[in-house]
Length: 308
Image (cartoon, rainbow, N blue to C red; front, side):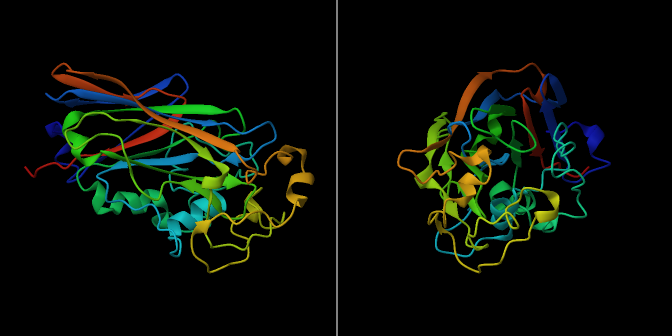
């Protein structure tokens, strides 16, 4: 339960807790429940000069949140991520900045789509997050994960919220594609119905990549999101989500040495390893500190507060 000092200001307060490198942001909440600490990590397993992953969006929920449906048109949220890597958390995550990158100057007023249509907002408004909202982004840098990069985020919450956060979902854009992405179409159970931790540890293969069906796959320099000016410049496809059909040619791998090994359609290509592990479960003191301690991420926790 939130301390009473928040009641005059908020009916349903949203608390944003972020951490970068050695920086820690915390907030204290009174709690008699046990504290749950989870570590979420992402590693790009690709070879040198291989495919690049955009910062990975994640969310915990009650299992009813559908990231996408194969065979159906992509939502605005999937379109924004698959084409341009936009999650909606770019501008409120301390430590995340496009400064000194090809996307310097990107701001809430010039994103490819309204922030209200991003996965961050759609997730927050979803019935799957009625009692709490835990979501964020994992990133090795603002450009995401190059081969060999790894990063993690640690989230803390009390076990009274497990029932509402038993499932894990994630999404990331894949470069160099027009609208290729990796994600789970079915929620991943990380706690069982009794609240016991199951966790997750899996490898995403090239054969697991999806195509959003929102942009024609021409792998053209004028349509791939390599700079701010090119965002949302691809030709619309008006298709449906399906498994990635393959590249149209090999030019994309030869024009830039950075992508000579980026053809993830070759057999056995490993893209990423994603893990959700439990760090600890302990009974806190009467006043519990909740925060994130990690390389980079965002933790959002919304707690309903009764009216005074």
